[in-house]
Structure formats: structure tokens, C-alpha cells
Amino acid sequence: MRDERADMSTPAPFDTAAIRKEFPILEREIRGKPLVYLDSAASAQKPRAVLEALQNFYQSAYANIHRGVYQLSAEATELYEGGRDVVQKFIGAQDRREIVFVRNATEAINLVARTWAEENLEAGDEIVITALEHHANIVPWQMLAERHGTVLRVAPIDERGDVVLDAFEALLNERTKLVALTHVSNAIGTVNPLEKMIALAKAQGCCVLVDGAQAVPHRAVDVEALGCDFYAFSGHKLFAPTGIGVLHGRLPLLESMPPFMGGGDMIESVSFERTTYAAAPQRFEAGTPDIAGVVGLAAAIHFIEGIGMNAIEAWEQSLLEQATASLEDVAGLRLIGQAREKAAVVSFVLDGIHAHDVGTALDRSGIAVRVGHHCAQPLMDIFGVPATVRASFSLYNTPAEIDALVAALNETREIFG
Ligand code: PMP
Image (tube, rainbow, N blue to C red; front, side, top):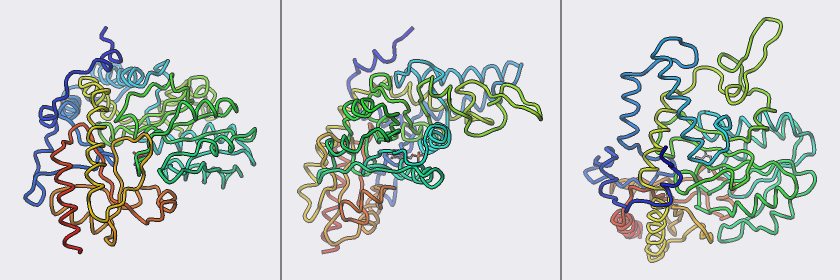
């Protein structure tokens, strides 16, 4: 059998022109200009391979799964469960049963908060997060604190946007039961030194959850090597459809956890007197799941593996370097977040021009960027800005698109004076 992970270390040469042809939406024009899509951190565009996999599935293999004795249902079940194998290999999980399909990273984190944390944490227990977190990795822990009296502690960052490791370490104590960390910041691109942080958390005996929503599209992830207990991500940022996401959990933990939602497909047997639950991961997949989403996710992963994750990372890093250097030359532009290691995100503000006005001006040139707080309001507060402009890069972006961004920013600067 072909070893997908081995393929990732020997990538084929990077051919953006060929890659762009795989994304039909990139042929679109916006306001008479070619679309320059610089918002992949919000959601990535979909390659033909994913679109075709969805079409084929609905057209020729569609049925509900796990229940039918007939051929179509068996085929659909095979595709869905085969998708679990694909995800398992993609993130280096030890066992296919460690892969739970959910709607998105948000649901994955809430699942852990509602099951593992409900069961294992009590009043006064502490959860450590970082100042970099997306709301998805803040709010579920605040909600838990309201229900259970747990305490949320936040590791600070320095002015560059790196977590202050000494301060992070100082927060860990015998009351710390969970460390919940983003792998990569969506708002400013910081890549956390996870190996170090997880080792520190593990030295205190803490459970570790990683929010990998912004990591899996940009770098090879190996959950075993990381040594985390839970790893969460969304398919839609990984070129897959919306509505499908993954929670990876170490099997002994998943097996010890109560169900998340009750209903069909998550039970072993039901009577009015007593219901017993299915083993993991079915226990956490109540109801008809996003079968087509899993088909699309598997196709997206195959697509990525065909290009090679290391090649994608190298390409995006070159775009990041180009963008960082050329944005520094735009008058009155301040980069927000210049961490030692960054993924393909540049966040910035233009002196005297609101981020929303910048976004609207860029849209006139067909350039799609994200403006706002990026669901990271506490982080914006730390940098003293209400909002930033964020350009995020993916494998289909080109140096010419960064030039277009810089030119449009210079024009915006002139218009607003
Ligand atoms: N965490 C991070 C770091 C993110 O960037 C996002 C999406 N912006 C999420 C969590 C939540 O992802 P979703 O909305 O797909 O659940």
C-alpha cells in the first residue's frame, strides 16, 4: 500500500499555475478584476477533486450509513469509514477509533468541554489557555467555569505575539487540569512551540487539547509526536466542504468519556428502562453524520498529499516573507504580530484608516481579505486595536497577488490621504 506520510517528505516541484487550474472559483472576476482570494484562514476554496468527489458520491453511491443491508448503504458506509482511515493517517493518529467526526473545530472543543471536562473537572480546578486563542477556545471554557466553578488562566504574549514561555510555565500547578492551546493563531499567525508547551503541561500531569484549525492546512501534523490528548480541526479550512470537522482524542480518554449528544447511531441498545452506549468514536457521532462531508474531506486530504504538505508549507512561507517585506514599505502600515515562527497570515492596520474601510477599498480591486477582530477580541485588546486587516495565503496564491495587494494598499493610502 502507498505510504501517504512518506510521500509528504518527498514533494513534487511546486507548480502554482497547475494548482490554480484545480480551483474553478479562481477563474472568477470580482468587479471586473480577477479574484485575488486572500482569506483562506477564514475558509479555503475547493479543488475540483473535492467537488467531483461530492458530485460522484451524491450521484452514484449515496445512501445513509451503518444501517442498510443493501449495497448502496454498504458502499456509503465504506466511504465514510474509509474517510476515518484517511484522517487517521493524515494526522498520525495511532488508532482509527481516535477520529471523531464533528461539524467543525468549534464543535470538537465544545464536545471535550461538555464530556471530558464535565466529568473530570471540579470547582477550583484550573484551565490554562493563551492570549492567542480564537473565541472557540475561550468561550466553551468560560461556559464550563459558569457551570462548574473552574478557573480560566491566560498565558500572556510578548509584543511580537509569542507566548511568554516562562509565564506559561509559571501558571501550571497541581490545580491545572487542562491546557488548551492553539497550534497556530488565526489572527496574527503565531505558531506556538507546541512540543515545548506540551512537555511542560505533561510534566504537571495536565490533559492537553490543541486547537489545530489553522495548522492542518499549512503544515504536517503528527498528533502522536506532539503528545497531545485532543486535537481539533475543521475541514472547510482544509479545502473540504463546510460542516465536517475532526476531534482526535486518545483512545483511553474517548473510551472513558460520556456521550455528547444522544440519539441514533451512538447506542449499543435502547429500552425505556436502560440505554447503553456504543464504543468510541460512534458514541460521539449521534444521528446521521455529514457523510458527504467525510467523502469531501478524504478527497481534500488526498489532494493535499498529492502536492505534498512540505512543499505547500515552503510555498506559503515564501509568500509570507514576500508579503512581510513589501508591506513594511507601505506608508503608515503597522504589522500586528511578528512572532518568531508564523504561518501564512499577515495582520496589519493602516494609520488613520479603519480596517473596514481598507477591506472595502481592497474589494474594489477584487481582493478578498478579512477585516475585524477575527474572533480573537482579547488579542486585539492586547495590541490596542479594535480590528485589523488580515491577508492569509494558501497554496493557490501567487507573488503577483501579493504585489496586487500592496499596490491596492498604496492606492488606498492615497485616496484616504
Ligand atoms: N480556532 C481557530 C484558530 C480558528 O481560526 C477557527 C476558525 N476561524 C476556529 C477555531 C473555529 O473554526 P470553525 O468556525 O470552523 O469551528
